[in-house]
Amino acid sequence: MAEFVIKMADEHGHVREQTENGISPNEVRERFSQQGYMVYWVKPRGLLVGGQVRLPRRRKIRMDTFIVFNQQFVTLIRAGLPILTSLDLLIRRQRNQYFSSLLQNVRDRVKSGELLSDAFAAQGAFQRIYTTTLLAGEKSGNLEEVLNRYIAFQRLALTFRKKLIASLIYPALLATMVVVMLAFLLTYVIPQFATLYAAIGRSDAIPPLTQVMLAIGIGAQHYAIHAAAILLLVFALVWRWSNSQAGGLALERLRARIPLLGDISSKYQVAMFARMLATLLAGGLPLVPSLETAGSSLQSRLMASALARAANRVREGASLSKSLEETGAVPDLAVEMIEVGESTGALPAMLTSVAEFYEEDVQTALTATMSLIEPAILIVMGVIVAFVLLSLYLPIFTLGAGGVR
Image (cartoon, rainbow, N blue to C red):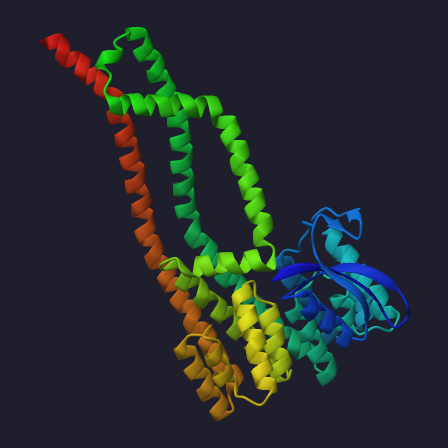
């Protein structure tokens, strides 16, 4: 998903700008036009928008904080409190100032007559799946049950995400140790040996391998700051390019070709999509809006684009399983399970089974992959250290052998 800045006016004539996630400018424009807003323009978010410098917004709401808020919100609604009173109570208890300011804006909009879903959507800081869930609850008159399903979904997603992060911590630490160790050897240890051998004055006794290693170390010591600055610049340019539509798609295609990790990433997106779609359908939302919302809520641009095409095919009358199969973005097993769910009239339950299957598959595959990566990193670390030490101590062995003769 890319970020866009949209300028629009509501039915009361109030003009505002806000940041929205979307697949393309046309998709964002169409979404807000359907909500009754008059859209002036939609531009990709950057440092310069509308002639003014706009710094990137970094403030985010922690998912666990948001889950707690919704759980408390549901509890207050279940107790019979009005929505405005519930929001007032939760705003006073909210310690996150940014989140509190958003809730105050939501409260003011609801007080002025807006729907709760529209008030949250207007903030530009909440996922579309959440605002769509609220809309489904408002239309069905069962906001409490719909929010409970959303909370259950987010808890499962958060638990799954934490498991993935925990699986990646140790390999990340090992990789960091390798980089730090290599930087220490190049910028400190090798130049010390270069000083030692220069003091000995026996340049003819230094093997070519050691001379190359000493030259690399001296160069790294002298140009370390320049190299770091260049790397930071390249990283910044790649990061900015990756946030664009074309750059994000190109990097995703590249990531999908990585052995093992590409397959794991694809299955993770399928699991997230299936669980989102199951939650929306169980909340009473129609299939096409549920499919569009689930697609726009995913981080993968490739999957989001594929689901947008599938939503168009479903709108034309095709079945969900056939539409997903045509995209080629969903594994055959998932398509077959969805087809069974459609034929039996139990699509939300089957989608939940698809999500559970691929979440377990991702966890198993990630554990197996990490069990291969961790020893590989240790082996690479050992080989690097052995090679550097051998090349540095080789002249000492040579001088020692010459002294014996």
